[in-house]
Length: 385
Image 1 (cartoon, rainbow, N blue to C red):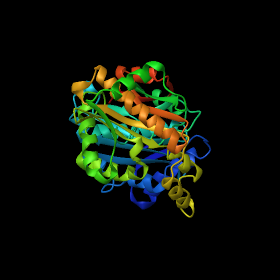
Image 2 (cartoon, one colour; image 1 turned 90 degrees about the vertical axis):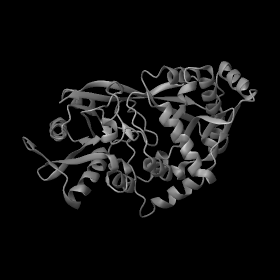
Image 3 (cartoon, rainbow, N blue to C red; image 1 turned 30 degrees about the vertical axis):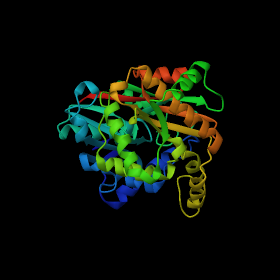
Image 4 (cartoon, one colour; image 1 turned 135 degrees about the vertical axis):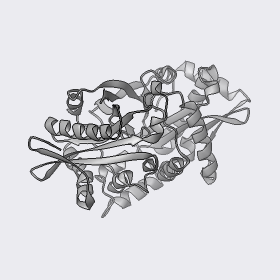
């Protein structure tokens, strides 16, 4: 498929695959706030048999060239698990996606999007949600606010021009995702401290750190709560057992017991909160390259992950307790314990919570109560095919 002097074709062979990976590094190299992913991680994301997303997805990669030079890329994909979700929750039958979007200019952007749409149409899809790169649990949405500082681990960063290029291709916002930033060196407001203190006096409540030596048990607890807690949320797609195992193993180097909490009520796990040291800080320093010497810096950092920022990517409370005082109390208790440990043991000064759906009133109220401020906004767009 071509658009004037831009040609777009499916990725075929090792040369194309390498160009698909490399073009993102070239197009973003002059952006001081873009964090280059580790190349091994970028390749693994795209590879069937390694990334379990491919177990339940149909995927096609496209590469744009001008004069033989790679000038953009896009993935078109269909998540079979997303197709099975209720349409009122965002996905549902006939909904495809595109992502991993990079383009040198608007002409290239439109040619790539048209190629992705044509492929999705040929697969029987009737609407698009994008960009999603590639699972909803990876990097959903386009960054539209917050380009002035780097993203935290597993959050996206995009050229500010992309918003106009995508919208001019006929896309409109379907959902906004927000992240919230807060100073964790100061105590939370008095009302939050009182809620935490009251919880500590309640013998029915127990907040405990995860236990790495019982990793499989802890992972199963977290996934069980997550799939229950998020099941009614917009955009929800359940984790498969293989995805849970894969994600757990990949994130194990970032997991510290005192930064990840499970809340129990009457001895039963009912909530969790995960927190990761911001690995993007050392990754940005090594330019996304482990070799020849970047691995030394990363290994030293992983042994003692001192960092400025902690990210809370996921938390969940069993549905039976949602919209109750207990739910917010458990959340405040876990946040406070993680805040203390982040400052004391890892030298962190700020935290980032998210992403949070724009209409998740419970989480937005918690973010407001701890005096956090929205620092980034992402948009997932939609379009009928």
